[in-house]
Image 1 (cartoon, one colour):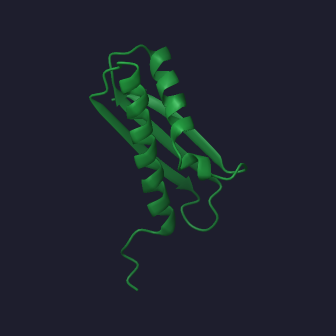
Image 2 (cartoon, rainbow, N blue to C red):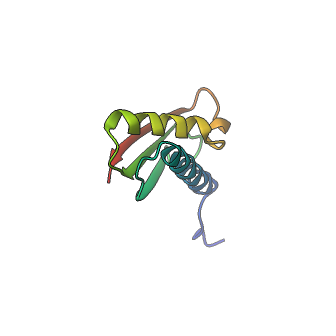
Length: 99
């Protein structure tokens, strides 16, 4: 092949980012927290071979206070079925920030 398509890890990270985004949006809507924009970026280390660590950053636009947003992201991670598929020894470093 030409190796121009996404790798299996890229496909998995896309699924993780999508699932986290939907789950965080659901939690924000449940709490009437304005969520005009939610973005999730995910990256794996190393990018090739056996992945040892995944970093994901949730970026939200909201008028809610930091404590509420922290809770929304935490519950969003717990509700994300894709993140539940990760093995226990694989570190998922999840952070959040405002847009």
